[in-house]
Amino acid sequence: MSRFMKRNLTPYTPGEQPRERKYLKLNTNESPFPPAPAAIARAAEAMASAQLYCDPAMTALREAFAAVYAISPERVTFGNGSDELLNFAFQAFCGKALFPDITYGFYPVFAALNGVPCEEIPLRADFTLAPEDYLGREGTIFLANPNAPTGLALPPEEIARLLEADPERVVVVDEAYVDFGAESCLGLTERYPNLLVIGTFSKSRSLAGARLGYAVGDAGLIGDLETIRYSTNPYNVNRMTQAAGVGVLESEDYTRRNCAAIAENRTCLAAALRELGFAVTDSKANFLFVSHPALPGDGLYRALREKGILVRRWSAPRIRDWTRITIGTRAEMEKLCEAVREVLKS
Ligand SMILES: *Cc1c(COP(=O)(O)O)cnc(C)c1O
Image (cartoon, rainbow, N blue to C red; front, top):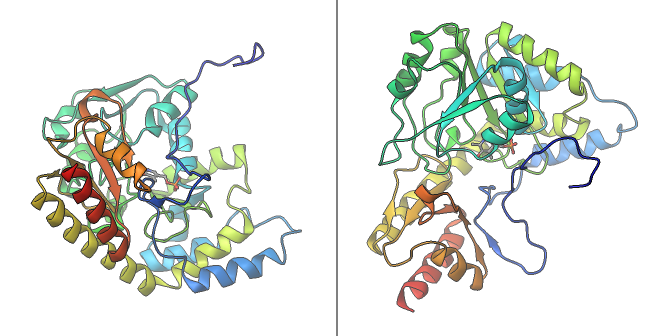
């Protein structure tokens, strides 16, 4: 920190994106599939007009999204990745924030950045979330559903309990992984004006590098996010990414097929790892969260790294013996299994 810095912040640490050697990257939950061909074509075409500012209202993208999700266009907005929208939500809706002790690592960072006090509510011993633990506590609730890095999902009825218990409290549901097999809360936004659902095109729609996230809610909540967005950067989603988003939304079959392939590979990998003695949570996401009694701490992470495979690990005491593995193609999962077998032998 230089002597000029007026803030004391601990930034988020993104997963490694190494340059020095070619790894099999199973550490940041990216898609193993390229973007839909229509997304690539539309983004390239949009680049030809990049001398002009993009549409700050994101009209074409908004209308394409509203049609696919059967909502009215004023109930959605978009961000430069869903991370930006989460940051906006912390700015707009938080006097205080509540979220689980084990969840997406960006929540405490956004809270600190925006001077929002927060309270971490411990997950139960088996990593499940009990909604009643949040009742009677003040604060805007942030829930990743499915949760990261556990992969466990709550049914929308459980989240509805929180929404009903206090209609004056905003609940933000981060559905980054919802397309891989969990049930979305998007339909609940019609009934609950205090629900904000945030999602991303980074994982199931293969656009992590293009940066596109969405927020859906009551027109009131979305209007408030728009106020923050226009106060920050009305051109937050660039021309090429807006066009890519439209192309992806024209390719829903492609997205569905990719998600089905990931879910199938997840089931196979979970079975293979359980066979090898791993504990594996019931993940509904595009990753598995695993631990093995013979491989405590960062043992698995380091051994796989030496074999050219990157996975994600944590140092927080409750999950320091756990590893998160992104689901890839069948061939990638076979390569991973082979490497894990070798690690267990040595
Ligand atoms: C990946 C992820 C995000 C962020 O996604 P971007 O749209 O790429 O910013 C948000 N929340 C969770 C839980 C994630 O895992």
